[in-house]
Length: 197
Image (cartoon, rainbow, N blue to C red; front, top):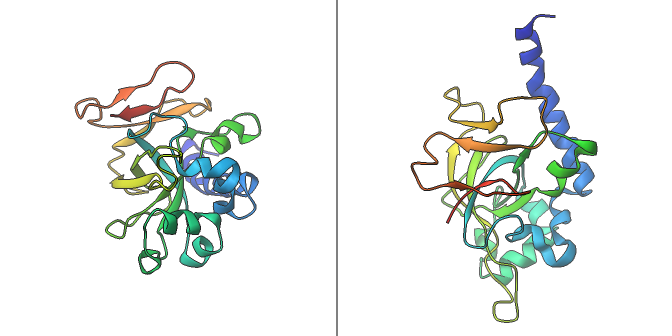
C-alpha cells in the first residue's frame, strides 16, 4: 500500500477508535461525567477559570442530554430547559492518541456545555473555559463551557495539530497557530496541556 493510501485509511480508523474509547469510558457517553460528583464537567487537569483546547469526539443530541446526569447539572446551573437542544453538550479529548488500553486519552476526556450561539461538530478544535468544581459556597456552578470553535474538523488549513508531530506517540497535546501570541502557555510536569488564564 502507498503512503497516501495509509493516510486515507487513517481517518476511518481514528473515528472507529474514538467511538470505542467513548464506549469504554461510559456505556452512554454522557453518563460517565456523573461519577465522583460529575467532575468531568468541571476543571480537573487545568486551573479553574482557564481556557483549554479540546478536539470534539462526541456531540450529544437533546434526548441523550435529558437522559443523562448532565441535564440536572445544566438545570441546576441556571440553564433553562428550552435552551437545551441537540448539541448543547459535547465531549472532547486533550491527549492523542491511544496508549495502554487508551487509558490516558479516555480518562482525560472533557465534558462541556455548548451555548446556543455556538455549534460544534465531530473533530472540531474548541476553546473550552474550565469551571470550578462544585463547593459549599457554589454548589451549582456553570459546567465547562465552549468559548469558540477555533478550527472545524476537516479544515484543510490545519491551524491546529497534535504535538510532538509523531503519530507513534500517545501523549500528544493540541497546539494551534497563534496561541503563544494570544498568551497561551504550556503547563509543566505530568499535565503539559496548553492553557490561557
